[in-house]
Image 1 (cartoon, helix red, strand yellow):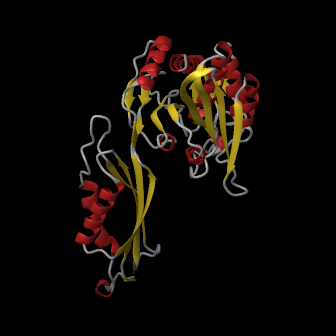
Image 2 (cartoon, one colour):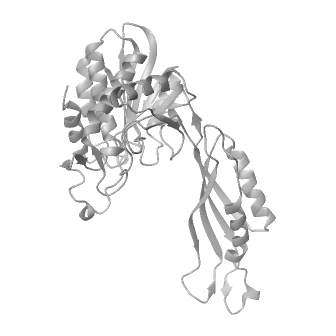
Image 3 (spheres, one colour):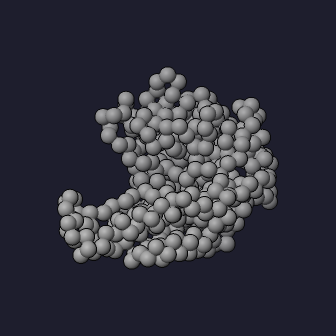
Length: 382
């Protein structure tokens, strides 16, 4: 239905769903799909005052077949300084063929396109094979502890199997359809605290400067090649994100130095191997330290197959573009869904403005994106 996706997208942008607040986005989706026979289940998780809303909506066909999931998040990052926006971030605004608003690209366009694609598919094929499901969360941009991961845990407890999933992350780079993510690198972070002895800068023999001790170890870590990657993943990278030391006074040797760092790692490395190698460097340099690790997510990979082929064919049929498969970028909720779904890919609009001031999406891409999702459903659930 021409324009229906755009109208839904505008309604979603107008709901200020700053993570973890869904602001009624999922209720709007549920109200649209329930009359078509979708069973809608809301899973509310997390503490009061920071409640996360998860929608699991399913439409069972009349013949055996796979379970195909369209997944995404209704929450958005904060707008930043509203005065820096050309127009109100939570009032959808059209300029020069683009629709502006927080979440326009990440990822309310995908949510709207998936919803309308599901509606059109079910109306045209009420007797389809298998099961069509929507999985939308309001905890992707935040800690991601009460969102998709909780739905996955609930489905695992029920013995639910998922066969294919498209996550609506904004993966396109220059043109709609030019890139599909078929995996993501893992994310491993740590806080390193190097202990020294505070003292006066004029009497360094009475102190121990942790910054001076840290510097050679830091240089070695920065120069280390962790792995060479493989045919699907680029090499593992290590980056310092924060470095703090000192009291602010110019005549005081600091008593400790604190470093936050992060690995984005391929399947060629494991969290255990990376931890061991870091520890070996720190010990070799004789540091007195503590180290606290946080595993943000393990890498996942969907090798080319039925799902990626169906999605690529839909993209080419709708846009004429031949997509490339990539595993670059940050983490996504695909890492959780991959725990119970063999084939997980990500596809959505152009990502050039995500998380930025004046986030926007090309209006001309909205209907084609919806059509790509619908075409893929037609191929997977005949």
